[in-house]
Length: 259
Image (tube, helix red, strand yellow):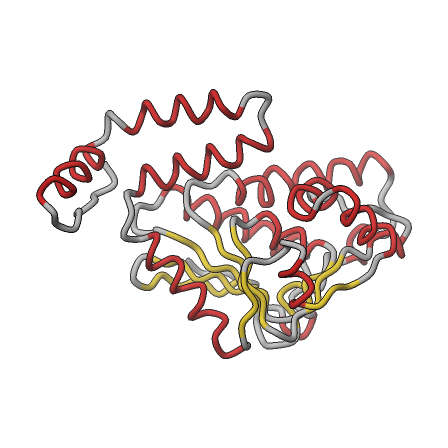
């Protein structure tokens, strides 16, 4: 896959996606969002990809926000369309992907950057990272799911505080409030994400996808329990279920094929 604003590479079942606009602090412009949408769709339908690590180029920023110049003169209708398109093609697409996405936050994750990280299923931050949603300083609010996902992760009170004050939190504080899973030194950032995905790679791929779908459904659907029940039932029809049970009985490691 050749992109202008992304570096994309598959190694040992992991798709590494790096937003490569270091001079612009990896800000999300239209072209970058379009390329991200393509890469997310590719990951979801490609069996070779078992998980995705998403990060930013350099050590200053994961993504320092959206490219404000692109929508500074938008009307209300255009703004609504911008948010809808971005959420559908990128942010919701990540959250609803059957493949686990890990955001490796290597610096500033602000505005659309933090929204991108929150759309991922897990987040790991370098110890110098700073996170925040500063949109109200521009007379805006987060438009790529930030008000919803931050509330889901840290609770209503803390979400309202962070959004309305536009304050940044350190990586350590982000871990304390549940915004990130782990904080590690910059040099260990990618290896920590790899460590998690290498464990997930040993599990049944269809079951992993079903688990992600069910967890996301607990937040986004009226009856997440029913989604879980349905996905649980579907697992019984897979070859991986038969293999898992056989391996358990025979006291050996299972060999899953994703079927």
